[in-house]
Amino acid sequence: MKSKNVFIILLTAVSLLFAILITDFILPIFWAIVLAILFSPINRYFESLINKPALTSLCTIILISLLVLAPCFFILTSVAEEVLTIVKAIENGEINFEKLLISISQLLPALTERFNALGYDTNTLIGQLNNIVLGTSQYALSLIMSAGENILRVLLLTFVMVYLLFFFLKDGDKIIAKSVNVFPLDDNQEKFLIDRFSSVTKATVKGTIIVGVVQGTIGGVAFTLLGIKAAVLWGVLMAFFSILPGIGTAIIWFPAACILFFSGAWLKALILLLVGIFIIGLIDNFLRPYLVGKETQLPDYLILLTTLGGVSLVGLSGFVIGPIIAALFITLWSLFKLDQTT
Image (cartoon, rainbow, N blue to C red; front, side):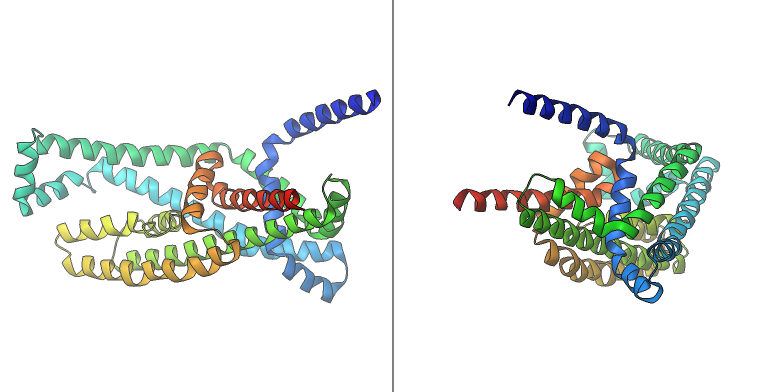
């Protein structure tokens, strides 16, 4: 009994040390697992044609690089260039929010009077808002520049993810089988949890990414056709904010429509408003419940809370990690309740 206790203490200590060692690589490991799950059907298809696991995994990774990694790199590069262009335009006065707000105050004199009655000077507010917009743009640029400065770290983490992905695709079934044998739970419970993790991951990633890409693409195309600068940047932001069910993309396109309206481009504002409400908005209402809620069996409010919590905790990867944790939380408590009743 004493030796068993010593063994448990030693096992716990070594496990904690191992966890500390791989802490910096948690996200690459996670995304390697996610990509392995998502592309496992394609990997099996390649395996049926080639029948060589190593070559099959390599072909799948090449496909992932073409479909996922290369487009992400291209989009991030375009966004960085457009943010830099916006910052320079604001600093040079090409984009002048003071003129826009002055025109708004002229079109809506009642609003100006209301501000003055509350003790606010509209000219001061206009200057402060312009400074806020400039500061926000400069902060976004600094984030992108800092990411560029850490390019070696990004490349290292990407290499680790791709390297692990190769083995997850090649030996995934063996790794799962060994994990089931080692982990101290009933094998049926472990298999159920693995299946649940896989289904929730597929639903969350497919749902969030598909909805985001579709909404961001339509929004970016609409901005381009309407002659709005930095269309790629706004499209990416719409794709990002699409993780918020309901209001998500309106955070971008509605203010843009208002700016067009108060700038005198009423027709463009109306077109953008109609596209935002009847195309971008309807995509969210129809696709999201079908792709996310149906398979995860999570209510919309829980998906929203866990998505925001995940993004706040670990960054962009949280839009997948949050709902997965929520689904596993509910599943584990369901298994616990079932175990207590039997």
